[in-house]
Length: 147
Image (cartoon, rainbow, N blue to C red; front, side):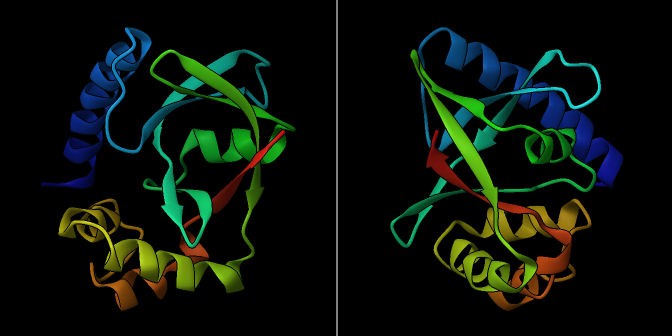
């Protein structure tokens, strides 16, 4: 599947995830990220996986040039919603040199589809923990902290 087809399929699935979350159905690590648009000032929502690793909560970029990444970098706070519960959080970007070990652990402790997703979207060249960690300079990683 090419990157454009994968993105279209993901966008369709994302709409379903948002609808389920808004109706109060939470599943897996999925949450709704609401962040103010860096240019428009309008609130934008994105379904996001919030992953627990090493006692912290992290969000990993899954697509190149993801709008939520640029918006999160510009925002002081975001809202994370899981089912009917919302909380305000700060997203702290992890420096590039510290991303590799987190990416390695994410892929090593997740289903194989997680590593494959980074390859399908063009962010990594290999779906292995080592291959994804090697792409740390292309994959934004944020730690979720209370606001």
